[in-house]
Image (cartoon, rainbow, N blue to C red; front, side, top):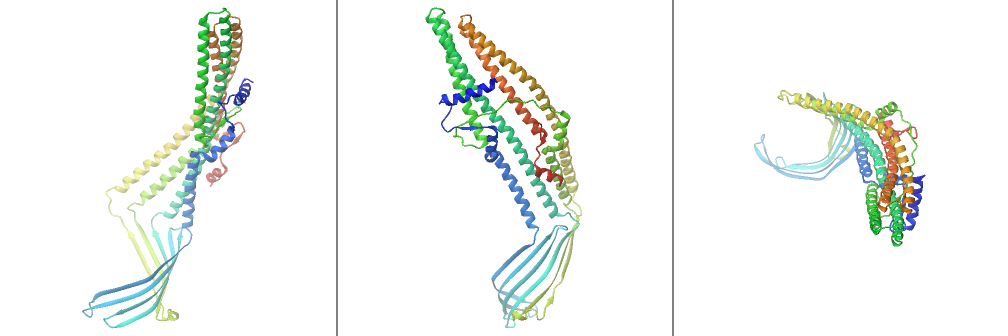
Length: 494
């Protein structure tokens, strides 16, 4: 009820005090602020760009696994050379002129990390040599299919594709975590502005009460019912209350700027916030909360991705100085003739086979040491995974305890505010009857303001801590539902 009255006073002040409101001022709720932040926040935009990078990198890799078509053209090739012929023991000049083009279709093989290619090279050339004064003009066409297959080594294509898939999953996790973090920070910034507005409203109430007591003191002094020292103290209290209003106005504007900067609003746009801070206590089962957290927290999946990535690095390390081979096969036909239509009149088969091996002999223990170093990295990642689980449990237990404590603090703060309000009203009557000095009344006024702020802060602390529990467990206890994004559940199941 008290907080509702403060809200009403704030709306009235927006209308009555032009210094605290501007025509065209935008009134924001927490939901509206979240909507703006989800589109304009610099942090969420950076996370989206990183997600786009991962997605496009994976798209590019998948496209690279499809058939690749290429065409290379050499419109003009001309050369004139002077060479020595060992058979005739004489120097001769050779001149050639030609044009050619090569069309290639290559298909990577994900299953074996090989590549199969279909190649057709077509050309025309004119060549003559003064060793026999013969000129040749002919068309040529070389058509063949080839296979290049690595042997006794890991599948690089599959490993690269898996890495990009994990990178995309990690980016999705980071984006989802950034959204949760955005909700938490927007809520904190929002309530900073809200509390600053409330503090300004309360300070204006305090100013009005101080002004009232000042007028009472002034009338008493003028009537000779009080010492002039009482008026001096009342004037000081009045000036202090005015200064406090100005200070709260400055704090409010600073909080507004921070809030607008974080959610991505125009820093010059005038805003005010309104919130419902009424609290409905939520019952939380600690064991269920921990189970939800361990089953849903995205940081755990990120640590698993780190372990998998480290395993990939171990595979690469094992491949250093390894025994490996490569097999190349090709088969095709070559035709040449001075007439284009007769180019394959007398074709020539051109099969080719090559098999090569790389046999490491001695590396002075380099590979062994690199493998041990990478195994240590993997163990470190596994240790981080276990520590992450422990940290999640500790964080949930801490938030749970804090929520239980805040319930008690809200009850105490509400009672303190009620007592402070009654105490101030009683002592204001005593002051009006001359039974209390203005300095004593000012102390009760300050106490009332502090208790009002303490009660509002206790409510906001509970709401923020409840939001923190939702982030820690990825479960909304107010709505009784999980909040893990559907696409992340699908990715983890796959």
